[in-house]
Length: 99
Image (tube, rainbow, N blue to C red; front, side, top):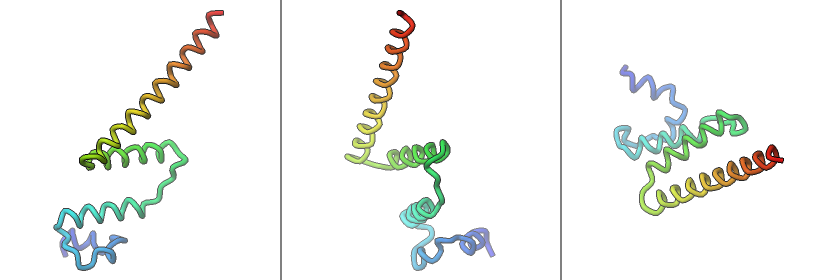
């Protein structure tokens, strides 16, 4: 047995990939998608939030055309919101200690 066959025996999504070419890039991408979907995630922790941001960044990097532009606009709006919140907080702190 090869290492690839050993991995296939322990792979929980093996049944989903029956009949597909394991060397096809689209099949590999589909398998990775299925693994991400079946992976347990707890988004209520810092690690869960960071994992979510990492998955968003990976999917944005793979996107093309209008999807990539949409991701860039979303990230820009998020950064703009964070910048505004930081500015308002700094103004409030300075005003508090100035009096």
